[in-house]
Each structure stands twice: as C-alpha cells, then as structure tokens.
Length: 34
Length: 236
Image (cartoon, rainbow over all chains, first blue to last red; front, side, top):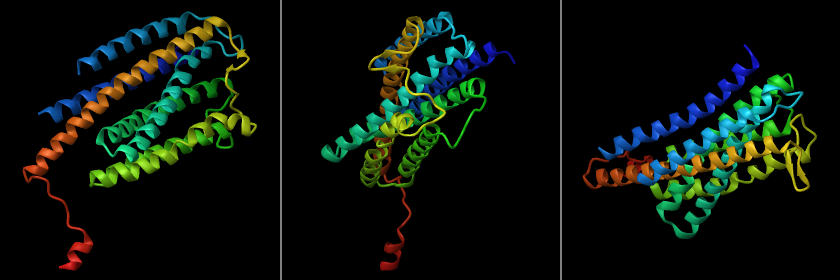
C-alpha cells in the first residue's frame, strides 16, 4: 500500500469519525424528540 | 438546532479548506507524505485537550452552581474528547509506524500518559452510566472531572519531564520548527477542528437536555421504575 493511500485513508477516517458522531447525535435527537 | 447546523456547515467548509492546505503544503524530506499527518494528529489531540479542559470547567461550575446545564456541558465535552483522543492516537500510530518504525511503545512517556488519560475519561463516562440518580451522578462525576484534568498538562509536559521517543512540541515560544506553509496549514486545521468541537458540543448538549426532559416526563407519568435498594429491602 502506498504512503499516499495510507495518509489519505487516515484523513478519511478522521472525517468519517466526525460525520459518524454527528449522525449518532442526529439519531438520538430524533429518538428523544419522538 | 439551527445554530448547530450553521456551525457544522462552517466546520465542514473550514475542514475542506484545511484539507486543501494540508495536501498542497510542501513535504518534509525525511517524512515524505507522512508530513501531512500533522494536520489531523495535532488538531484532534488539541480538540481532546480542549474538551477535557471544558469538562473540568463544567465540573467546577456544577459544584458551585448546582445546575444541570453545567453537568451536561461537562459530560458532553468528555464524550467528544474521548472520541477525538482515540482518533488522534490512531493517527499518531500510523505516523509512528512510518517514521519511528513502531506504532506504539509503552515505555514512551507521552504515549503511556495519553493512554492512561483516555482510560480515565472512559471511566468517567462509565461512572456516569452507572449512577441512576441525576444529582449523585452529577456530583460524583464532577469530582472525577476535576481530578482527571490534571492529566492534560501531564501529557503535554511529559516530553520535557522524561526523555521520550515522542518529540517535543513543534511550536515553541522562540518560534516554530517547521516551514511557514506547513505551520499555516496546521493552524487552519486546528481552527477548523475547534469549530467542529463547538458544533458537536452544542448538538450533544441539546440532545442531553432533551433526553433529560423526556426522563423527567416519564418519571412524572409514573413510567420510571427503579430497582429497590438492598437497604430498603432489609428495612422491610
């Protein structure tokens, strides 16, 4: 695996964690609002 | 909620610009492509340090004011801090494997203290889950939230206290040890992740408030059923 792929993958993982947490909050919000 | 959406949009734009700068900045001769990792490693761990500091602030303010809002601030911030501390450590391990030749070393003071810090904040979150009474939960976790923050300066200064594999900070009072383009990209990313933190914290606190209100409504409606304590059974 090339170094560039590993670095881009690491960036993607960080952004995915942020988006994933935002989605998690959105779902909890919908559940709490019901 | 409108405020959270606006903050998330600003954070997304700032992160996009930060990523652009990260991938157009010059590379270090020795680190090569891995030079870019500084743009996610430093901001995520900065975010975690900030989050744990805010947890301590919320904890202190809760013990002074005794209002649920400060407790929600402390708990919400700790949760976000743990997430980004774990992510930050992972990015450091990827960088370490490539540049140091090893992803982890328990003998390294910075790595070991960071791991302990994460474990303690995970324990903080577990403690909160284990106490049903909101006031007891808030008080006990506030005490832990204040004690736990001692680890933040300990992690930061560990590289000065003990000779370690992990290098000392690249930004020092006498200047930065990196080219301006790399420094600017990193600082833009630190700013972007800070906006992201504010957005997620605002959203998390809103969810916590809503969940707390729903729990109160259920309790008033008589739906909340708690297990009797052992002492109560023995009294009967």
